Image 1 (cartoon, helix red, strand yellow):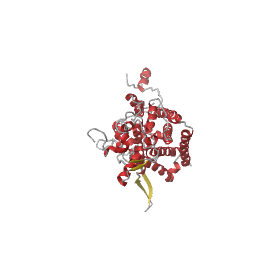
Image 2 (cartoon, chains in turn orange, green):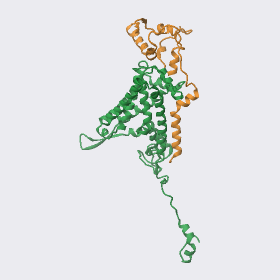
Image 3 (cartoon, one colour):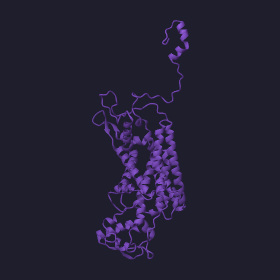
Image 4 (cartoon, helix red, strand yellow):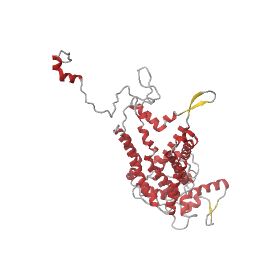
Length: 128
Length: 331
């Protein structure tokens, strides 16, 4: 082998970089953590759980556009029921704690939605 | 033909995973077994290729230079384009690896229209597409660490915030999504539309382009158009890196397509031209100082020659030389 010292050093640096998730997670010890957002004990969400898991952000985006641009505040769900298009009034009427519901998955996945750039988090002391 | 066959290969891979997951339900195969096989192939193959290359002797410096070599003291040397020491080589390598400096010097030679003259012009298109593609791919790759770390380090969130700076759509559109697709599609188009280039292009030139284009497009689809429950996805990826794999129900087949194409990329990587990731660091025209005139470089495969110097010869025959009247150096 020629210039073996330099090449082996380079390889070790490369391996250390690509195995970053392994040793980072081993050090933090949180690999098996899974978020459990607190859902209300009874009642159904306005759409199915599977749909909300994947698409709630699009629904809220559509709601915002409908309310702000078209002044349309009525959402007709798949089951035909009508709901008011409102994050803080409709969604958070049941899911009333942002930290125990929204934030759990968002933090887990590194998602930083910009809802709260404009909205005030309801039921927080001193901010209502 | 090469274009079509590599496109067919990529489409076949997509079809295989679609049938495998959606029809046959082989989530454990595509979600656990093949990724582990791929990562072993990737790491093992990578180390093997580098060590194999390390065995090649580099007997002499190859001075492909673009600047004045260090010479007489009143002539100003250009240490970055024609390095004579380790520091100069380091800077040249940094500029090469991070900014593709030698590609930036790409020129186009053509007959000038208004006369029988040869003209040389800068040709930045290749450099631009290459740098857009490579940097976007790196940033996209690093951003994906959010699925492989818990808790997610701050710097990854920072990178996401910068990348999603335009704040368009929900979830926000990333600048690198566009750059990656534009870059890799541009490199493909360049290969297809330049007849000289198409003539020399092989299956293994097109295949990585189609594969990476497939990865990029399925990634964009997953983020913006065909959504799935990414909490389950992260449970799966975290299961993989903590060696306790799980295959949650209800993950959309589009995720498996994306994941399997990445798996293929990892497995294919060390055995393809993509190994320039490691190979660029071993480029003899870039990583060796041009010091042929300062330092003596000895060919490493020279055979050992048994030498017998004049002094030793004289020691052997001094008596006879003196007796015969031949002058000797040492009495």
